[in-house]
Amino acid sequence: MLQLLHIENIAVIEQADISFDSGFNVLSGETGAGKSIIIDAISAILGERAYRESIRTGCDKAFVSAVFAGVPELPWFEQMHVPYEPELTLQREIFLDGRNVCRVNGQGVSVSVLRALGQQLITVHGQHDSQQLFDEERHIALLDSFARDESLLAEYYAAYEKVRACRQKLEHLSVDENEKARRQEMLQYQIRELERAALKPGEDEALEQRQKRLMNAEKLVKGLNECAGRLFGDEDADGACELLSLALRSLGGVLRYDDSLSPLNDRLRDLSLQLDDAAESLRDYRDRLSDSDEELDEIGARLDLIHKLRRKYGATCVDMLQFLENAKKELDDIVFADEKIKQAEKLLAAATAAAEEIALRLRKVRRAAAEEMQTQISRELTELNMPKVRFLCEFTETALGPNGMDSLRFLMSANVGESLKPLSKVASGGELARIMLALKNVMARQDAVGTMIFDEVDAGVSGRAAQKVAEKLRRVSEGRQVLCVTHLPQIAALAEHHLLISKSERQGRTYTEVTPLDRSGRIQELARMIGGAEITDTTLKSAEEMLYL
Image (cartoon, rainbow, N blue to C red; front, side, top):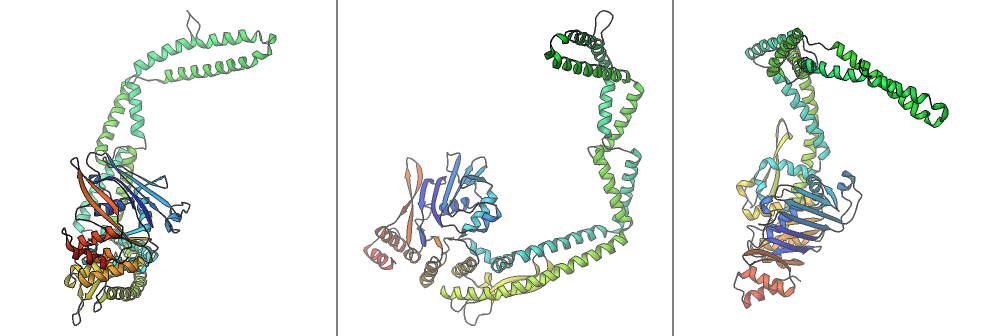
């Protein structure tokens, strides 16, 4: 469970330390006091997107840390090859320049790794999540999450990707005849031009280097002659080779007087041999050096051709040769298109058959899961004061597509005698909130997540329905930690722990504070939630009567 949350410099929160307990935790306060900012901070520490605009004005970074206690042995530990620990400390720094620094137990991790862990620690249901139920494209993904058919989905996605690739190949081969003729003519021209050039890999680099040497031949010859003179000497002075040879002869003459000079003698002999070898190599290079204007002209002409081809086919000879190979392959596809089309059609048929077989297995799993999902959601909705509601997963068989061979939409009838219709046609805001709450509870049973957060999910709910929602949240908290941001006194009254979020101004700046409430404080806050700004003896008495603890 989430035990401690520390926030620095996020929006109106300069600094806050918030302790949470097991069971049912409620956060309440005036609109704009900063309740949703706390949820945003929790989302940030879970690896969700964090905006630099949320950093408090005048600060260069924001910081959030969270301590989780009693963490079960989640799949994340095995996936990331991290030793299991029952207590985790998550930290995240968000900088104005867009950088993020994330840590788990002091170890640096990426935002994506933090997100993978966060998804296994907490689920967050925001006040806008219910609107997702209007998007029928999302319904089949929600069912898949309930069915926990990840391995079968992965198998299908891989099979469907092969189908998609085969379709693309077939479309590429089956181009219009006029387009095919035009493309064939262009490819033939490009191939002829490149083949006439007879390029070789690395030829351009070798020619440029040779051109550079020839253009500077005079300077090279002068420098090499000077170097040779110092190595070989002339009639006026001995060169380095001769001087080293004389030095070696002198040292050899005294070796018989001191054996310890032998290593030095060996080193000098090695130097002499290396120097002689270098001098010969220098002489050979100088003798081969040419300053032929004719060769320079030939190289220039060749490079002009290569530079002209570069503008069309690639930056280097290697790139242009690759272009040539690709062009020949494409031309071959066009020339032998009929044969290749038949081959591609066979491959597409085989890939389609394989994908359809998996899609049928996926359909079977989904329909079985849908039956169970309908039963569980109907049971949840009955507990949420919607006893007459009928909820149905309606399947429609489709052609093979990204989601298999089915589409799905959720239908409901809220009242007796009414036909089943799409949620967007029949569900009110309060009904939609309760349907999403039911769906979240059903989904939560499928995983080991220890904490559930509900951010103002009571929108549009009032009266007896609000009481039922409160009772449902209380029951959910018996099996896991629940954090709920609410404006409803019915929900706040059933909480085991109540935090008040308040806002104040000091020296021209706004500050948000988080205060744990005792029984007296809870009565005051419940009275405010019941009666608004004016708290009377009547509202205080009502608040005391509502208070669960």
